[in-house]
Length: 185
Length: 185
Image 1: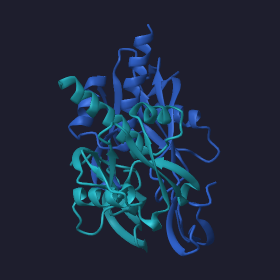
Image 2 (image 1 turned 30 degrees about the vertical axis):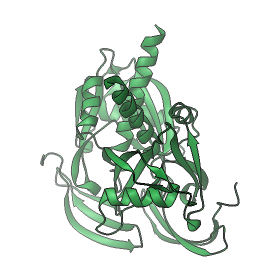
Image 3 (image 1 turned 180 degrees about the vertical axis):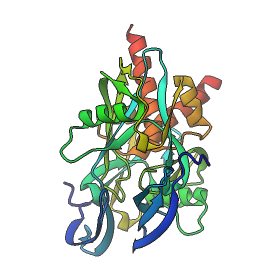
């Protein structure tokens, strides 16, 4: 660790410990010895998956997101349960949200969503070669499944209808993955 | 608003109101009439900027991020001050973090970083045609400025050394922006 940058924790106060989030107010020692305070959110981590069907459709979900008071268009995603493997979590979310089973998962990236204030890490996969069961998505998820072409999904990013960070990364990386595969053929 | 998805706020409890973050624990009515609880973080919004110098270098910053306990590689970014215009905020951050002035800003995208639990919106720009002053970055920012080619920046994403969501989106969109411009020439 570069000592020119490191911030040493001097004390930590737990403000909130919820079902999903925690909030901490910490006092730190800066590299120059001065004191600063950090507001930090803890999160269990999450997965997100770009499902690309055998006929080349990207499967997205529309759902109401309470914190932003909007219906958003996103790739399937969900929080990691305690001790759950990210791949198992991805398979569970795909079955629950879009009824996809027997998926082939390929890891695209793992990244911090907001490292300035939260420790959430998100594992991103592309899902291919899956079967869709006839089952509707989980009744208590209140979401709508939509299918688009990759080109349409890229247009939804460009015109601002898709405005979720993980979904933007997922679709841009899926494009590179698919183009890379077709270039190799 | 699609009433099939809407969640109605029934009550809201302020848990924390800090310098930057707020935390709320809300009771909502689900579309089926049932009750659920939402843990919601509020954030003032932010900007991030991909600075591309006249000789084609992408300028990045290394800094310690306390919530993830790591030094990260990111594009310049910062929170929006109260009533501040996002473009003004972008110019301020560029001057503070990398000493760039007289920048030309082009808006790339605005997106939610984590709409599942936080209302943060991030405005992303590409900065070109700027001058670098000899000034060092703000002394109390404790960051290191690095310059890479666009190809190197893309490699840093691929090998996982860049693992910040806004930086991944910024570099992937800057690539498309630069390729689009050169295709038009």
